[in-house]
Length: 414
Image (cartoon, rainbow, N blue to C red; front, top):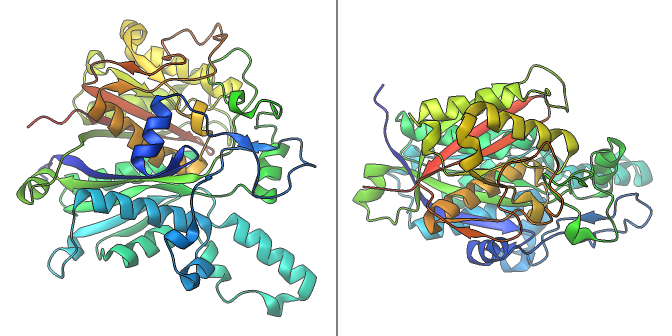
């Protein structure tokens, strides 16, 4: 099967740094934290009271009252980001092309707030009071379904649910659909919105979250000696990905080119990576091999970088294993230091950030890296964004269940 070039022509974001690519990307490059005390519900009795909430998303600006009633926030965020990406791309749906355009979206947990609310309703008032919209608000494939209906795509309509790797896997599978001729264009990315008592309580019980409640903006500190867990976050990131000739024929502005995708399984533990980072190693190697990329060609890595003791140490080791002596020359950053961890939405948002880094030739910073951990001794672009040449970048995502996904993005060149 002949491989085709896959380019990015549109981007969309809903993040703790702001809604819209321009606002969110500026805040990321300026090192602005989107993490604060939780406002969406009363978390005063929780050991963890901080999160990366989306603060400027006004539902009424995006949806009418009926739509708002039937769409869980994770679906709303996904649709809004997809609309922005499609608007930037200029891609128009027609009867002729819509069957060749797909929607492939990742999420981790679906409509968890809706599930919790309806369960409470049933216990308090009886099961006859459950909303008729309950199931279609909550199931994980609603973002891809609603995006397809909203935009008018009639090609593949798929949902990827691979925990914290879901957004990256969605982008990677979209890349494959375009590369191997199954689609001419795909809207792809990730979305998540599970900052609710049940979600917060679950991750708190796992002892996975930072408890730096008194200084939320400093709580997410990837690769720092004093890191104490990740910070839950919400939002969505979407990309329009097209076959190169298809984009060129309609005069589209090309932002970057997707050139590689790799995935693997740790086959080790449901929540912890192996100490040698073996699964991450294999996923990065696979992405580089898929794009015929030599290790010395990579300039920047958007790391998974969760701010947990295990992940950051094991990811650093994996990078060293893959890149050898070249590891010390890489610019590496974790944008989770500013956004927090968007779970299934993380890979979508970070794919957008990686495409923007390649487009603008700037590596975003890792903030809060005040005391680098001894075992995390690479160049993590501390504190301040760095203007630099970025020809090739990769973005890493690793999820519960031992699933690993990596995409490679390069600067577009005719």
